[in-house]
Image 1 (spheres, rainbow, N blue to C red):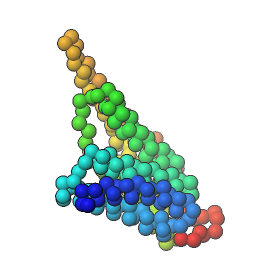
Image 2: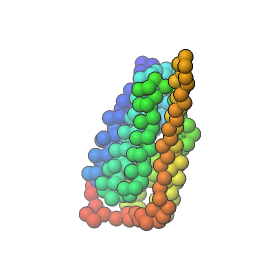
Image 3: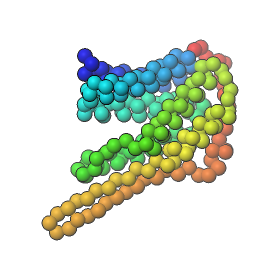
Image 4: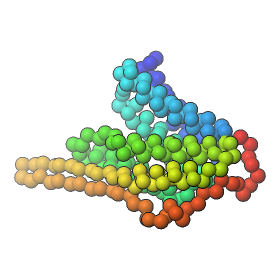
Length: 210
């Protein structure tokens, strides 16, 4: 049973992603906060179980990040739809994930001899995204207003996302030649864009039930 528990938690998190986004859009803020917090807790729990009992698998190595990406992307999209997240930040998050996905596909498509492993900057970026969504949902759930906190987290998200550089390197050798190939994708946010974005914690419609 323990052997399948990490994959089960990842699968539940994958299913929770669209549910959390739907709750955000429909205005069930407290429920959305609880679902997101539970999904985040399951992420840490399945990783702990996998390492503690050595029950890692190739399928789990694919399912876990897929669930994380889907949860982040759908929650960012939902927060944008209700006017709580600026478009440029959503675009930055999507661009980062697309760059990573394209790099992974290139490695698989061309059978490049590259070992993929998570970097510290990638983990820091994911952590900032989680904190941003959690803080925004917390403010929504309790009808709080903290523009300084929100802008601080946005600035951290801007910095961490803009520094993510995905580099693909490959070496194809034959009896006659060797070819080195590398490509980099770097995402930059224009200076001043953050200053132009304002987040107002108010609703143009009557408060919705939580």
